[in-house]
Amino acid sequence: MSLLSQTLARVKPSPTIAITNRARELAAEGRDIISLSAGEPDFDTPEHIREAGKAAIDAGHTRYTAVDGIPELKRAICAKFARENGLDYAPANITVGTGGKQILYNALMATLNPGDEVIIPAPYWVSYPDMVLLAGGTPVFVEGAMANGYRITPEQLDAAITPRTKWVILNSPSNPTGAGYGESHMRGLTEVLLRHPHVWVLADDIYEHLVFDDFEFVTPAQIAPELKDRTLTMNGVSKAYAMTGWRIGYGAGPVALIKAMATLQSQSTSNPCSISQYAALAALEGPQDYIAESRAVFQRRRDLVVEGLNACPGIDCPMPEGAFYVYPSIKALIGKTSAGGTLIADDEAFASALLDETGVAVVFGAAFGLSPHFRISYATSDEVLADACRRIGKFCEGLV
Ligand SMILES: Cc1ncc(COP(=O)(O)O)c(C=O)c1O
Image (cartoon, rainbow, N blue to C red; front, top):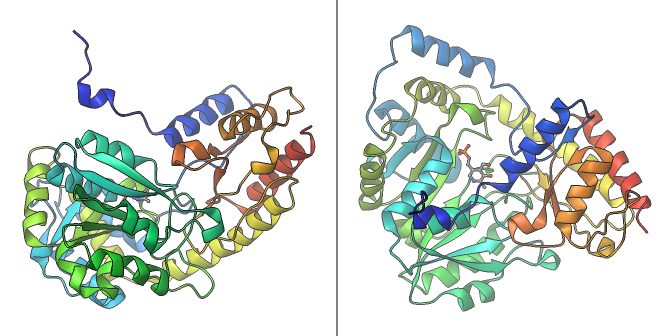
């Protein structure tokens, strides 16, 4: 009898984590490696948030808490939704989990039956399809074409909806492309969703605060209040406040869904870390300067990377609206051979040869469901990014 369950047999480990690990191994062997594969800010958590975590330990906030979050944090999350998104939620509409990842997982596990479909715009964050599979559902991919800024169109969404559609996942700004749905683009999608009352909306707003130039963030329940009763708005402190390791994410939605998610959490992990909850409270209620400061840094890095990559022969890199990723096309390089003798048959071969021959670790597009591309996370210093672009440029010049 096989050790693994049939459910687990359907899913694969996260490819981004696999590539990050491979880069670490090569670095441990003494190779000069630049890893641009991990999706987390390179800054430290702001000091007042760190202090709140230490104070929570000293104040004895080291015991079990309410399963899906302490009341103070739920109230602070309600205030955040009112202040930043014009959304009116009560604490009973809020659930707090171990990262946004657990919120998404709980929502899918609590609602999907075998055969239920979940629409996932591609390219997508690597975890969505596998979470849907783990929950017994069926991912349905809709391709956001590069020519359309990697956004799906209302017509494409409409055509993908069937009587089995349970959820559509919308992630703006997006991992892996950085593409954002501004108000007119989002409204195009919400108008379609209003015509299909059986479809629920999972809004992954984790990159809300990382938006550039004059792009204005919107979330579906905000611009289409009629959708609020069938929307789970997910967010968290990981990317907004450089708190990836603290593991606090949250969701807001109808009470019945929130309760079901809490039931699942009560039988799996129970409360998210008590200390982290107090730190998240300080993040939401304290000074918000970090957000604007980090946004300015990320915008400068985005400009540097887009310019650097577009100077590489054969790479075409659009300018993203947000997050800290770029997702260039390498269509012009497919079929060429690297200086080290590797045939660039696809984006996986490109990423593998790039790592072997130049020490730059990027994630190949197939992992995100749209090829031939690769993803760079530019959450690292300007010097490292400039060095990476130089190495990628040299690699591309060496292709014949
Ligand atoms: C699109 C997207 N959603 C959700 C998450 C989950 O973040 P966390 O679990 O750290 O809150 C990530 C993290 O990489 C992400 O990129």
